[in-house]
Image (cartoon, rainbow, N blue to C red; front, top):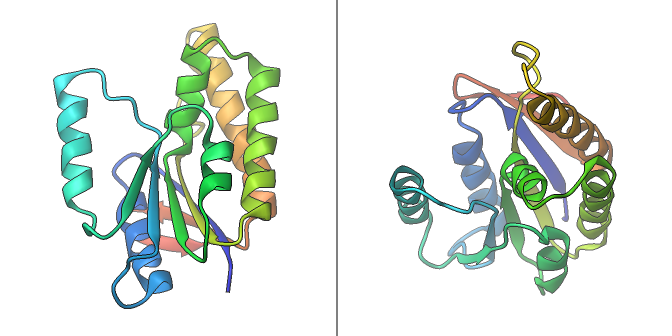
Length: 175
C-alpha cells in the first residue's frame, strides 16, 4: 500500500537511518525497488566524504537519482511500485535559495513536490531537518531559510500519512 511518510528531527538524530529501515521494510526481500533521491551538492572534501559514506550504507541494488533542484520532476519520472527516499528536504530548500529562488517560488516548488508525492504510484519517504528550535538567526537570509523550512514542513506534513520526529535515534510517531 502506498504511503507518504515525513521524517524530521535534529542533525544526527537518526533520520536517514530510520528512512533506510522503513524503505527496506516496504520494499521487502531484495530491496530492488528502492530509489534514493539525493538533493545534496557536495562542494568540499568533507561533504564529498559524507556522501560517499552515505552511498556505501545503502544496498547496491538501490537506484540513486541525484537532483538538487527539480525533485517534483524526478519523482514523476520514477515508474512502478517502488519506494522513494527523498533525502533531504532542507538541503533542497538551501539549493533553491542559493540558486536565487525567493520565498514565493520556494513555496510554489514545495506545493509542486506535494502534488508529485500525492500523484506518485509509489511510497515516498521524505527526510528533513528541524531548523526552527534554536535561536533566531542574526541575518535575513538565515531567517528566511528557517521560515520557509517551517512552512514547507507544515505543507508536506498535511499530505503525509505518517510523520515521525527523531530524537537521539528514537522515532516518535507524530501522525
